[in-house]
Image 1: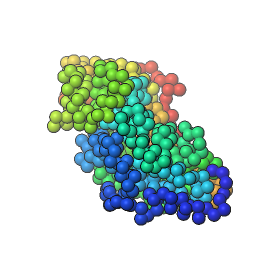
Image 2: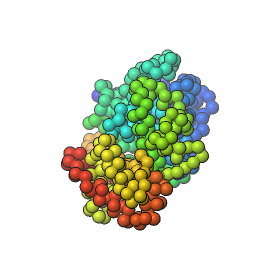
Image 3: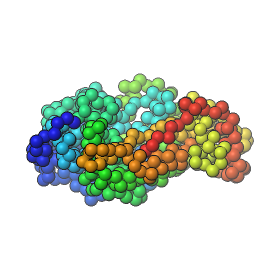
Image 4: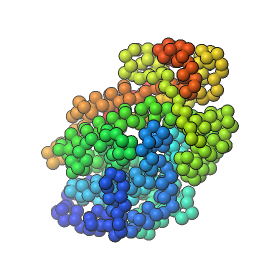
Length: 491
């Protein structure tokens, strides 16, 4: 972000004039309406991208996967979310055109690249992508949805790729858009691309702003929208030290509340035990299916992109033996049934009893093979209690991989950018949220098939059952210090 233009205001107006998507009224057609009471204005070239089959496919992929089995309103899709992120990125760019450093650094093509990245950031999302990616972090070879999106953009997975429209109608390089979406600020060779990437990859990015609000609306909860959006947008700026998204000191409180909103959504929704029970069931079914099918990465990606959420579960069920983990778990989640696994043990760093804290550290230090061995051991103990052999995957261990929720700091700028400080250094609230997230929200849980859980509780009692499983976990050797989860400072 080098030189200071002689008249940044005039240049900003000129840039906005070159990009109709940034200068209302800019809709050449009627806008599309998305919840809640939001009109997303569309130009002809935006409509062409939206109408492409690669983008229309996102109508079949739910934003929150199976969460609708807990929250009936959670049926919104990646399609709707992508439109929302496009609108948020447009607002971010419009706000940043008031920042002299940003105006000096960007061109018309840069602004169009940023808009395209916002619209297409989830292009590679497939059903239950986060469940498969969680397995990838635990050692299974699974496709990363952002990498898949890059392959779609650059024509590796489509006969008539959507990237051709970017080249012909936008004058934008699809590979550049793919890098900005997939790599984040640190993965960019050019400073302006790092800035554009930070709009989609930062503690207050446009992606988070949209999904927090949108998920809250559809779930029927208030947590993700209790911040001053307009104030936060008006205080966006470029950090001259890093060249990335920052806020002025007037936006400090809005940024703090935004971070808190994300914390509460994870605490009360995304990592709610019932939601995690379903996610854990899906992860285990997908893992079993992938291990038996032994598809190549390309074949797996092709299959995943061809399915909706429902059709993928139905297909896995049809192709799996009835008594396999995938067959049993998919049956419990489909065909008009909802047999959700029950939580019988919950561990965290913040538990009042040190034994539960110690057990948590042992669990999060496990790799995928270690987790399977522990599940087998827990299954054996429960089988002994019940006097019958439990089937495979009637006991599921669920935990977040170490460090998953750490994010980089956000810089707060003072005195017209003459000084800056980290939001975490300025805010006891944000520091506390980071620590509280690692201690209280990140949990390891043992889920058991509903009939077995009910029977085990009847035989042993809730506390005794939890204690029995706890002792089985404590019999594991303690994880090495280096394998323990790192807390981080922000979410």
